[in-house]
Length: 311
Image (cartoon, rainbow, N blue to C red; front, side):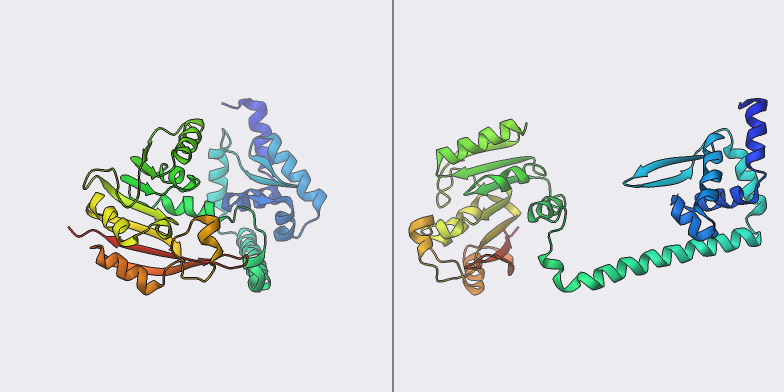
């Protein structure tokens, strides 16, 4: 119940053609005062006066978006009465013209957005864009990954391990370095992550049971192995039938300094070498592709390879 006074004010608000047109437009979508001025071809003060009155009687509500105020219909006691008025006037020429004006506004927005992306297309990859990070993309894609038992072999800084924990039932982190594992445990504890378990061990002789995992990941780890084939065979051994291996490693390069400075045993792999290693290790449905090139010299290229343990 809105009372006699409230009903009287509501009826007065609905007795104006311009306010009815504004309500009809807001029934289509949320609009700013500038949008309404464009569609109705009216000045700011006139549109603002009508919006203020509609807010006072509880038909319209506004919210801030940066410097703009956006208006929309407010469900309430007056909704039923307004719905009846709307139905009775939906086919009037005034409403039809306004809806056509709204569609013109929408088309202008589409054209302006398309023009922006056309204008920056050539340099889009070099621009600093909010939220455009490889970590963000990786986290998003991980949401499509199967939930199961993961093994991360050669954890490095542990970032990938923690990301995998977001989708996995459990992640087993294997590394030769007890300090690396201790750092990972501390970071996991700080973040409240409880499904990461650490195991000290060599990726070429995994201290893990046969067929104990659904996905095995070797991210920039295979080039540290003395015998990469042995590491991949170990990955196959600990995978359940139908399980998948994911390898991220470097494309073959000639930067000898990484052997001494970064303890790399191999200077990356060619696509053919990595595919052959996976097949010789017993994986099927193998794929190898170039994923990304470092923007900074010496511009290392990353390969992404996958394989499936036969069922």
